[in-house]
Length: 297
Image 1 (cartoon, rainbow, N blue to C red):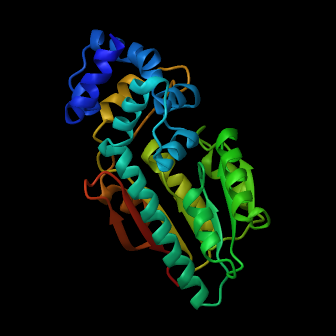
Image 2: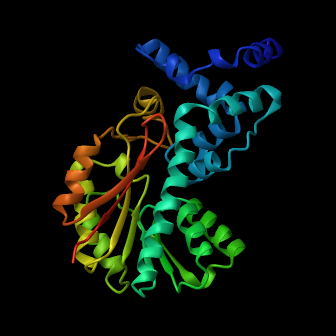
């Protein structure tokens, strides 16, 4: 049976589509798909990690960034490869590159003004883009304050920072921003850590408009004129139904709340907080955006 399934999967790569499988799910098909994730799906390294750490976790995001298929048996690895090649996960890797490129530009602009980059990365996950940007500017004097609630993600940051020789240029803080007291918690964390470049990539897609506004306003109050804000958005997601109906309610993620938000709506939140948008990048499929805004003089 497994051999037949593996042969079919390898012979028909284009017929495998997570998005197609979950369109118009009824209760029976939804429960069947959830069961499949917990059983057959665990043959895939990515699904197994998602079931353990969470499908919105920094650990899974870093796995997608690595883009190396793994799994139990050849079938599991074939399934994992198909998942890593889906539109959503391909676009996540484009988002990473866009955040990194935008950060490099912002850091270059700060250096032209003789200002050392002081970065805060909120809900940083594995902080791959921020760490790589710091590593690319060894003589900038740049530092980073990295916040996340997930200890496994922060351990990934420690490991990568050590490999890049950045231990003395970063500070890690475990901070949960999901309980509705974002502004107060953030103010306590950053009160003694002045910064001129904020990164909010992959977080606003999971919070309400009110929570997003509180966070961006809290950042704005601590940032001097001329500071930059790099933020991501998600106008649409090809697997939205899967994440909101199938993943939600699992033991690792009982309250998944993925938000599809128009670019105009997200820009309005940023503008209200006192920033002026300066540019935007996106992927070819229009799933994720990466924008940069400046707090004017």
